[in-house]
Figure 1 (cartoon, one colour):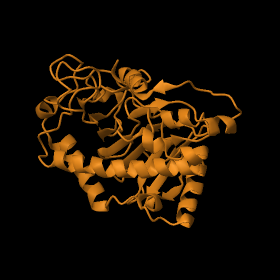
Figure 2 (cartoon, rainbow, N blue to C red):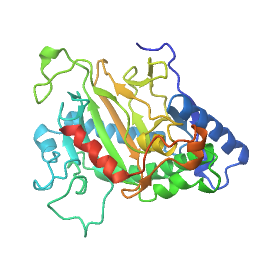
Figure 3 (cartoon, rainbow, N blue to C red):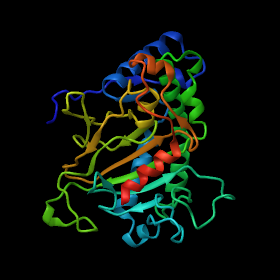
Figure 4 (cartoon, rainbow, N blue to C red):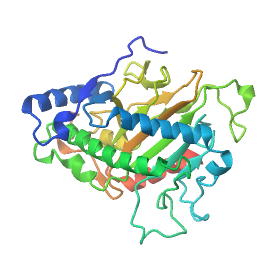
Length: 335
């Protein structure tokens, strides 16, 4: 059931991007952030310093790749299994239906990029998740622009997790999330969604069709997700506490942010990693570029004691190395 309540909180992060943000503006930000993360786990981010022209350029380049690049060229950078030529099981292009959520094929195509590791240490054959990014040849300016965009988004991600530490009133541990993301094993995806077809259209490359799933119901794996998307409405949907679905329609200039599984673990469930999905029934091709600001590969993630006290005094989660968690999740994406 789709809720009639369609608005998510709007939060200005500018005071945490600047060293001289005022106490008043930071307090307002953390108050709204605390409520948003407790109540719904999603919000719109403004004051993030990413210019509208940058966002539009990133989305435009992604759209050009999906709609104008020949299939033969897309397949040159296909995701391949670890040990298979350049494959690491994660990076690269995925055809319609290749990505799987809860055992069902998703009706989207995508290109996945991850944190670049030391080129001297990373040599084929690659282990799962430890290869090199596969950049499209066209549009020719895509690689340079997206690499610059990643650097900008890392700064925004750091500001958001710094504000989250303040919102939890962690005291001397306030920078725990900043410290755990200094070498963020970030992920960026370019995703292209054709409108959901009739099952008889047979658009999925593996013959599997699901008329209701552009991207199936899921939570995100890591820390925080920063999403920019085109102006398509009624596509991204967020599950509210009462089980209904809220449209997270785009707001010009704003970034859609949600918390992931690691933030839920750190807070011992005080903040929930919210389920969401994409059901795109519009008339045109939809494009989004989510940036997943994640913990370091070797970061140890366990409930923070202050959050344990606030949630009844019992740890609901054990500790985990983020890289192990990510590896298990990625295996479930394609197998």
